[in-house]
Image (cartoon, rainbow, N blue to C red):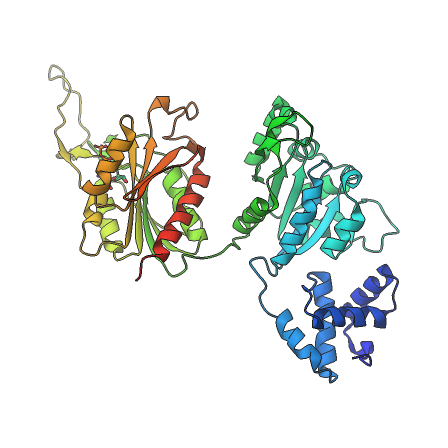
Length: 490
Ligand code: CTP
C-alpha cells in the first residue's frame, strides 16, 4: 500500500487531495496513506469531497495490487442509510443551541449525507469552526470576502451544490433577514441565492419568538415556501425561563430533512391504500348544490403522508380548492354515489381511510333545468333521500381491505358516537374529532382550518393525541397505519 502511485489519480481527485493535504499540513502521499488506512480500518467513511478522494484512492490501491483494500472498497460502495448521496448545506446561526448543531452534523453524516457548513460570525462565538470542521470533515465557510481562502467556491455555488439548506439554530435575526431579503453576510446571501428547499429550526428566547415582528417573519417565510421544524416548548438555557423557543432535537430535525428530501423509511412500499377526502356536492339543479365546509386538507395530508411512506395511494376527492397531493393518484368526483363507485372500483386494497365529509342525503331528483322562481308558488320543496354509506359499504364488503379507518366528525358525545361508528361501519379505527365551534381550535375550527385534535378509537382502547397541525396528524396516522399493517398477514 505504501507504494501506490498518486500520479495515476485523475486530475480532479488529485487537486482535491492536494487541497486536503495542504489543510492538514501533510504531503499528498501521507494524506493518501492516512485515508486508505482509515477506510481499511472500517472507520465511518468520510462523505462528500473526501468520499470522492477516498473512493478513488481505494480503487487505485486495489488496481495496484493491494488486496486488503478490496473489502473496504465494497463497504464504501454500500448504501449507507437514508441520506446517502444527499448534500446538506447547514447554516449555523448564533445562539446557545449552536452546540446541538454539532450533534446534528454527526447524525446527518451517520445517515450518509455530505454536510457543508456555513457559520455566521455570531455562531463562532458559541462553537468553533475547528470543531465544526472536524465533524463535517470539510472546510467551514465563514467569510463572504476572503480572497485568500482557496476554498472560496462563491455563495452561488455553495447554495446550489446542495440538495437542501438547513438553518439550525435559526435565530430571530436570520429569520428577519431572509423574510426581508437582506444579504449582508455569507449566511444570508447563500439563503437568498438558493434554488433549493430551506428548512429552518428556530431557537430563541420565548419572548423573542412571540415578538410581533418575529411572528410576522415566521408567517412570511412560511408563505415563501420555507419549511419549519419546531421550536419546541421547554426550559431555556437562561435560568428561570421556559416557554416556546427551544430548538428541536437533532433527531426531529433529521426526520424533517428526510421528509423534505423524501428520503425516509418506506414501510408501506408495495401497499395499496384508498383515501377519500373533501366534501361531496349533491346537485339540486344544474347550478345549485348541497355541500359542507370540508376543505379536504386533512384527507389530502393523509394521502400525501401515506405516499411518503411508500404506499401506492389512490385518493378519491370531492370538489376542493387545494392541489392534488404529490406522489398520489387522485380521482376527482362530485357526488356521494360517484365517490362510492370510484372507491369500489379501486378494491381490493390493503387499507382504506375514509376522511371525506360525505353528504348524508341528496335530493331525490335533481332538476334538469335551473329551478325558476314562479310568482305566487313560493319556495320549492326538496325531497331528500339517503346517500350510500361508503365506509360502511367497504367495512362490510366481501373484498374488505385488511385495515379500514374512518373518521367521526362530531359536535357532541364525541367518544360514544365514535365507538358506535366503529362497529356499525365495520371499521378497525375511528379517528374522532370535535368539529364544533367550541372545539377550541382556532377561529375557523377544525373544518377548513389547519389544526386538528383527534382521538384514536379502536377495539383496544382510546388514544388521545394533542392538538397539532393537520400535516402532523397525517404523519402520525400514516405511521400508525404502517405499524398496524405490519401485523396483518397478507
Ligand atoms: N362516511 C362515508 N359515507 C357516508 C357518510 C360517512 O363514507 N355516506 C364516512 C366518513 O368518511 C367518515 C365516517 O363515515 O369516515 C363517519 O362520517 P360522519 O359524517 O362522522 O358520520 P355519519 O356516518 O354521516 O353519521 P352521523 O351524520 O350520524 O354522525
